[in-house]
Length: 147
Length: 153
Image 1 (cartoon, one colour):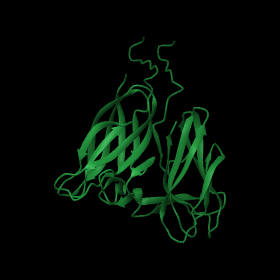
Image 2: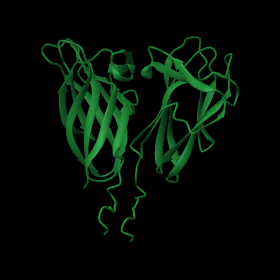
Image 3: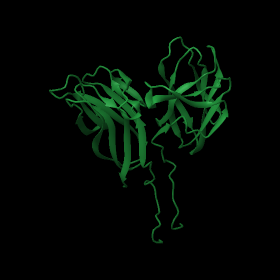
C-alpha cells in the first residue's frame, strides 16, 4: 500500500445531510432567489420567481448506499405549484403546495434507496399546478439515513 | 511511512462535523413541536414544545462511524424551560436544566462525550424529564444540534 493511500470503507456514512437552498449545483430552469420572510427559519424562503412549469434547481451531494428519508419545509399558497423531488433525475415523489392559506409544512418522502456510494444529483422540479402558478417556496432540504 | 503523511484505515473514516437543525427531526414520540420565531436567536428562532410537559420526546436519526463524539445543542434558557435529557440509542448522556429566571438566547448545552463502537444509524433523543422548582413549564427548545468527532477508535 502506498504510504499516503486512504482507504474508504463502503460503510462510510453521511451523518445528517443539510442542504441550504442557495447551495445549488445548477439551475436547469427558472430564476431562483431569496424571498425575505421575517418569521421564517433563517429569515427567508427560497423561491422561483419565474414560476413556470419545469422550473428546476439541482444540488450535488455525496450519498453512501443506504436507505434515506428526504424532507423539506415548504410554504403553501394559492400561486404555489406541484413540486417533485428527483434523485438522479428520477422522481421519488411530489407534493401540491396549492392552498388557500399560506402555511409552512413539512414534506416527507421515506424509503429512498441509494444503491451506490457516489456523488448524486437531487433536484426540485415544478411538474404541474392546481393553483394559479408554478411557484415553489422552501427553507431548506435535508436527508438522513434510516438504514 | 514518510513524515507528515497519514494513512486512514477503516473504521476511522467519519463525518467529522455534523450539523442538524432542530426542525429536522425524524420522529416525535410525544408533544407538540413547532418553530418559534425569535429574532435574537441564531437562525431566527428555535424548534420547541409549545406546551411543555414531562415526557415530551423528539428523535433525530444520524449515521455515525466508529469514534468518540461530542454533542452540543444551541438552545435558549428561560422561566418556562425544563430539564432535558439527551440519549443516544437509549443510553442517556445526562440532563440539562434549561431554566433561568431571565431569557438567555443562544445558550450551548454541552453534553458529555460518547463513543460509537461500530458504524451505524443512531437515534438521538431529547426528552423532558421535569423542571426546576422555579420553572413554570417543561418546555424544550432546539435551534440546532452540533456533533463533532473528537477522537478515533
